[in-house]
Image 1 (tube, rainbow, N blue to C red):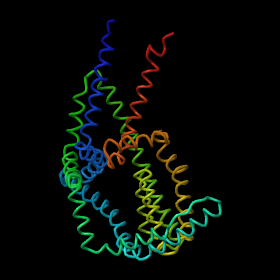
Image 2 (tube, rainbow, N blue to C red):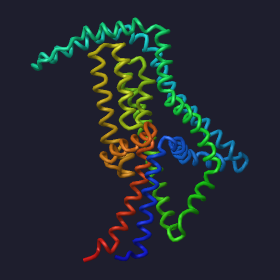
Image 3 (tube, one colour):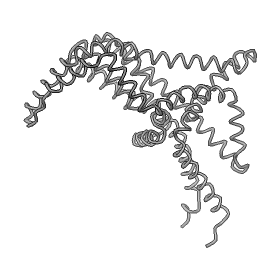
Image 4 (cartoon, rainbow, N blue to C red):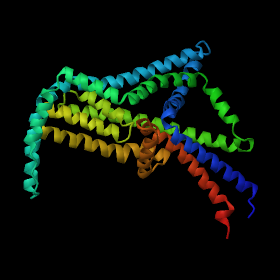
Length: 358
């Protein structure tokens, strides 16, 4: 059986694609800071270009890059500092009141089990005593030795995280400095006969990613306002930091929402008790999830990029497996680009002789 030139070219590109995917899988940990840097550079490059244009050439490229990076790092630091005061304020109170909360939660749980006729008994007093012993032994020396042991055991992981934290800003700076040159270099690698198709694909992918980022930003701001106001109406003292963190953290699908719900639950339990906290979380976060899932995200994000919820879940799991937590962050933008590729392949398939052959 003899293959046509077209079939040979398709086979060659399939082999290249398989090798590329294999390299991504094998070098996932090494490529993580470069992938994150590339995603951030793509998102921040329009701002750098805007500053250059606004200054009409009076601001050098490196100054515009440093300005944008500084604003971005300040925004990330501000988001982190929203959650630090909550932890510092609530941790000592949690240490004092956690045994009492365990007793209350255990009594309520056992009461519900008995009401529904579930033959299950759990010794919550043993759990409370265990927690009391653990906290009574948790002096500074014990905690310090535990942290030191953990660092020794997981030293390679800690060094990896520290290396990524230091490497990502460096990669981001150089990519923003030479963004046009990198894009031109990548475009020159494309075979001449395919440059037109690749250019159209890049334009479509850029449009989809722009719609995704703009839509996601609007969703985050609306939810930050909603959660702050909703928690304030229930009288939560830390409504503003918890609400803003929850709204902005929804950029990380599912994980951000769950973290915000956990923070609101802990702060509520320490301030207003179990019943009021359960009502607050059920109303505010229940309505918030419905608002996000059935109105904001479908209208502002989903309809723009066309990702089905099952595809979103699969993308989060796949990218998380390949690149860890960072993979969860870049899963949806990368999936949006892959969606453009799938759409173009489907169009070519419908126009092909294989599909139209009688």
